[in-house]
Image (cartoon, rainbow over all chains, first blue to last red; front, side, top):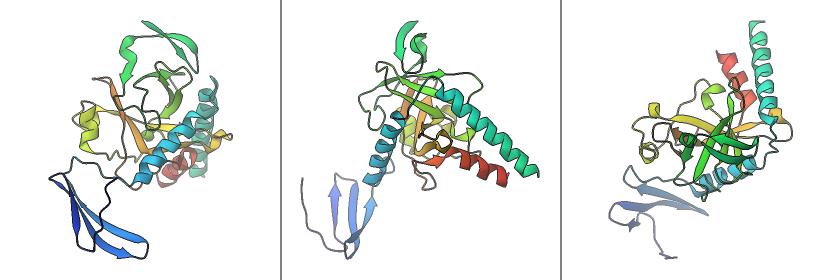
Length: 88
Length: 150
């Protein structure tokens, strides 16, 4: 991994068209500005990890052939109940 | 027709045209490139997203609009292009459902919507650009919110 030391307002270039600017440093937090073409996806790394973790949790759900029927019933009952409440 | 082994139904026959390519896989399961969508019954909003050659790997999915009427897809245009779609109208959006021990606490992942283009039969898990959406939306609570507002 390439390690570079930067000060506030300095920046680094990744390729020709991606620039990362150090906007501010306060304690243990760094504020970054990212200039990149619209086609480049920029996300916090935690987002990927959260989605990955959630997919694994979803896959580990105790799924049985009846599961879909059960949750469909729960959903229907819930919808009907809430419509009734709303009317009252 | 081809025979595949599935988690919910065991061995079943599916039409080859039902197979959807996920060139990048699904986060956490990047090696799985082919899935099939299976209906349990036509009336249910829930469906199975079954891995084509991994019988044990299946997700429950639901379209976000089936529990959140005001849902809006907000992803990079490239996510649509990757599966050969020009506009959000070309794709079907699904959310992966996590079902805990108490199924009434089931949640849907709107942070990572699954996009499917039925024309090209390609799919992709995108990352939502909207900060309204998280990996865990309680499905029953969302329905309640929508009905109170509605």
